[in-house]
Image 1 (tube, rainbow, N blue to C red):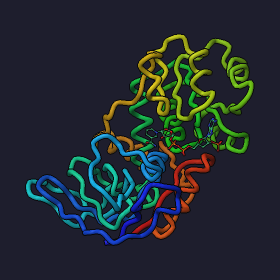
Image 2 (cartoon, protein in one colour):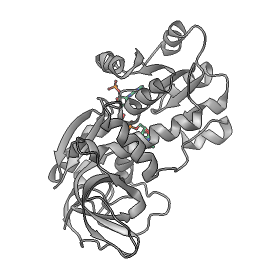
Image 3 (tube, rainbow, N blue to C red):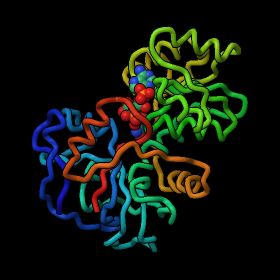
Length: 301
Ligand SMILES: NC(=O)c1ccc[n+]([C@@H]2O[C@H](COP(=O)([O-])OP(=O)(O)OC[C@H]3O[C@@H](n4cnc5c(N)ncnc54)[C@H](OP(=O)(O)O)[C@@H]3O)[C@@H](O)[C@H]2O)c1
């Protein structure tokens, strides 16, 4: 089968279409003919030289942790599976086929386009897990840094649904977008802390830090309770600062709950851009640029 992978770490140019063995579903697994796969900053790190814990094996290395497609093989012991699914894996999703445990997929809502389904899993689950860790709910004022991005767009909507007031950081051109998701927008950069204090004179109760730079320091100054600051970026600093990181609690149940919200029109999803597998390098350049709304997605099948 075809996949987009690399034989050496490096810049986006190392990503190319490669031929690899088509995987086979073992006991408890399903094989999915992939129609779309999301592109994350995680994948850029993998391409640049980072090997995630627990990953073994050589090259070509194929990135991608989220996908949507059609189940075309079912391993022994797997019960009934609906054919059209979205799900998650650990690397390998920029490919025509992916094999994952059957409890890592859930049914794709009929009205969900493939490119939405392919990019939905990681950001939505990460946002959901992070907000639950922070205990966000009714009456809270939450700041989401990088609110227009893949994770941020989901976090803003979920927190607003759960009754929080959400302040989201983004460039001015993304402010209408943030308002449409339910956040009060604020521009990042010099003076961010003062702008947030003006918007929230009563204080900020919790912070989701989805970008590096000033976001962490501003959150530490604004939020009194360190247990209500969660970083998706500065993992190394979390223990000494006493702030949170996201535990790996991805599950088909959580994904199904989020997909259902989408199906009912209660969660919106913006696809920033799509690229065919052959242009995976351009998809990485897009993500590495670090700006824009929603998700970058590879369309495959
Ligand atoms: N995706 C996941 O599931 C996941 C899981 C765990 C951890 N993480 C980590 O969480 C971070 C965010 O992931 P993502 O997928 O949401 O990334 P992303 O979509 O690529 O983030 C791009 C967003 O960052 C914003 N941004 C750039 N510089 C900013 C700044 N200084 N202050 C505030 N916003 C800024 C941009 O907004 P403007 O266009 O307005 O500049 C853009 O909307 C990454 O470091 C990632 O590794 C992600």
